[in-house]
Image (cartoon, rainbow, N blue to C red; front, side, top):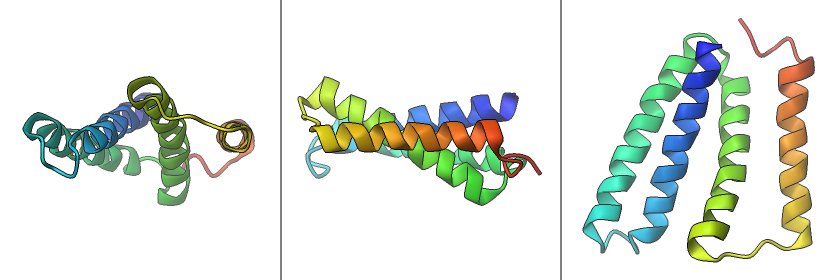
Length: 110
């Protein structure tokens, strides 16, 4: 269970770093640029902790899937980015894939 907490923390830091990347305006704003470094640095550190327990393929699938959902929400909430029906359905399929991996796959543990 601790491994999945580390994965969630990694994804939250990755979401923070990505949001700061958008806010940095191509690294022309200082504090958001610092947020990129801190966010991605912490995200990758927690990611390495997860890789001690879960296989890379499953970890990366979960990381990217959860991250895509959180980034889409972040873009909508923080930057006013719109999601059309196709994007919303695609995000729903990503969530479904995450659930399938965690509920039915034996690959999610060593």
